[in-house]
Every structure is written in C-alpha cells, then in structure tokens.
Image 1 (cartoon, rainbow, N blue to C red):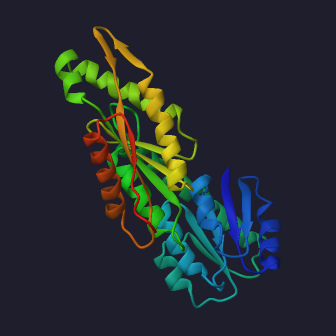
Image 2 (image 1 turned 135 degrees about the horizontal axis):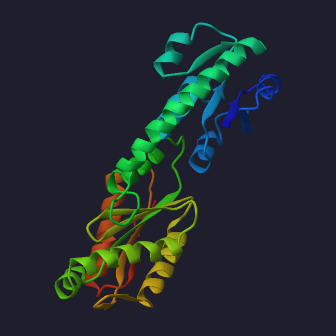
Image 3 (image 1 turned 60 degrees about the vertical axis):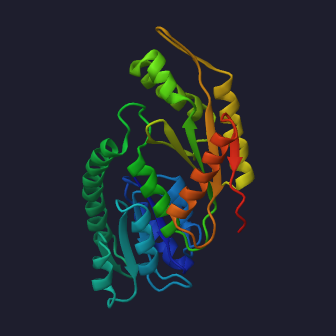
Length: 296
C-alpha cells in the first residue's frame, strides 16, 4: 500500500482528490495540508511514498515545496495537481511522476496510481541498495555518510531554522583496550557501546558510528538542555556497565560533546562546536558531558 499526503490551498481541491484516491485500495492517505507548513516535518517522521501537490499556493508554491521535498527524500514520488498547464516543464524537471489538470477524472487518476506503484517498486529496490551503503558493517549502525546527508538535508529542507542538537561521543582509553585485550575485544566494546547508547535514545533519534571509536547522534526537535540530559543518561548507563567478553573485562566510559544547531550556520560549523566541546571534556578528565555554550 502506498502512503500519500495531499497538499492544496483549496479545501475543495483536497476533498475532490481525496474522494478519487479512495477508489484505489493501493492508496493510503495519511495526511492533508492546505499549505507547506507541516509537510516537511511529517516527511522526517513518517514513511511517505508520494505527495500530491497543488502549484499555486502561498507563501511557498508547489514547485518550491517539491524541490525541498526532493532535497530531504529524493525517492518520494511527486504528482502535481493544478488548474494550469504552463508549469509542466518545470514540474518534470523536478522529476515529477505525473502532472494532472483539474478537474481530475477517475480514469486519468487510475493511470497515475499505476505509475506510482511502478515507481515505488523501483524506489524500494534502490533503497535496499542505499541501505547497504549507509550501514556500518561492524556495529550495524548508520555510517558517517548517512548521518552527514541526513543532517545536511535537515538544514537545507527547512524553511525556518530547524530545531535539533547533536551529541558526539568518543570512547575513553580505547587504544589501551585494544592494546591490553586485543582488537577482537575492541570490536566487541564498540558493539556493546552501540547497544547501550541506542537503549537511551528515542525512536526519532538517529545514532551513527562517526568513525573509529566515535559516535554521532542526531536529536530532532531537541534543544541544548534536552540534548545534555540525554547525553548524561547515556554516560551514566555506560559508566555503570562492565564489558565482559572472553578474556576482556573492561570498565568502559565515553566522553560527550553536545551542541545545538544555530541560525545560518553550516553542518561543519555545528560539528566543529560539538567536537571542541568533546575535546574539552577529554582535557577535563574524560567520562563527562560538555555542552557548547555558543548563544543564538
């Protein structure tokens, strides 16, 4: 079943399209919107296969919204539904699946649904390939490539300054663990840390292996105070745990740097602030949470 949302600034337009789509058992309408507000947020939280978009909307028109949607999730299918035929070229340049003129007849809508089903099958296959490219082979977490793209898209895809924070964590004395117990134990430690961190995160949070013994967490809709609390909960959970594996019996700790995204900054700026906070924690004695205090 295809999960779709409808966007049209005229309620009559939404109603007519909704009634037409209800004729197809393959379609599940999970939301309707009269403007762009809320659309980008739902794409970050829900699995959406297709968006039916009106074009002449304010303050953000359908073409602009479609571009932002594609920046967030390029695999989402876009279908334009409009009373005007002069935007077709621009629509298909954005890789629209179809361009429908109002009023939409059921026979025409049936062809669109068939296109969406075919397009969704191709997208699912591509997603499986992308998934393999986005997963860290050792821990099973998302990798550096994935989290970078996820955060970059979150920044680019938001009309206003998005609210989110990141946590950067680095395993303390990891070289000594490898030297003393061997790399097999070191690998096991990273797997255990992955599970312990994930245990303290919410469903909406995104955990990745940033590289080596470093982890990076994206916390959507979370300010600096909320991020600090989550990082501290993770730190305590890990600090109270002993990693036991064959001859390995290690008390492992992690140092964390926390930063909230600020207006007009880049992902690199945000990452740099979190990294500096982490480095400060290492100098302070490790096994702690340090918050970047840069003001908005």
